[in-house]
Length: 220
Ligand code: GSH
Image (cartoon, rainbow, N blue to C red; front, side, top):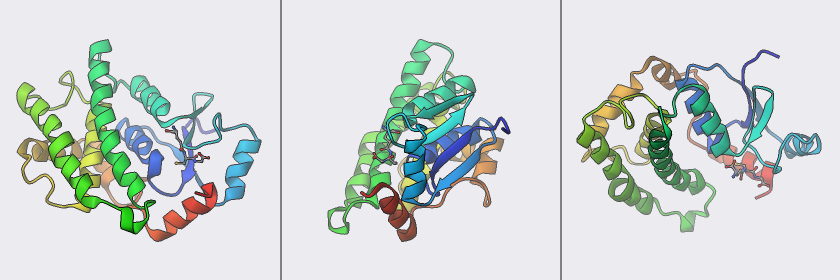
């Protein structure tokens, strides 16, 4: 064993991508095993590796962790990205849930039949429900990071969400100057800068091949 966390998931973003982001932001190296076939997935189930027969699976500190939220909270707490007290933690959780809801709309987009996809709704939610909140928080306290004047999981996930929405609508931050500055600042943190460079373990937006592989593995 290398001692590095090992991530098991298809070779694409999905629910694993925020985990990759958080580990990378914390400066933690990780290994990946990519699920390519249904047989691989069924073997994991047969071996008892998946508590609820689902991935993401992250092997870390002797545990086989499943459930995205549980995995992310564990990593955030372990690497000091989860606030200094319960109240900061509560705010980080709220901000993270907001960006998770927004990203969830984009993650499911490619798995939705084309005639039912609603990109306009995603952009509307981003610009009227989610981004105004983060813009206001940062503007009001005037600090560099969302919570406690310290880099946290909330910052990592907000940057991930911003970049994801920008892939769909490049001008989406045009009315959010504080978020534009936030994006530039957080993108420049060395661990994140490295993750944003080509060749990192960051995954590209899903393509047809990825969608077909996921459907075949999980028989959606
Ligand atoms: N609540 C779980 C989490 O957040 O990790 C949901 C995990 C989940 O739905 N995973 C999908 C899966 O394993 C792949 S992204 N689907 C197979 C199944 O549910 O049978």
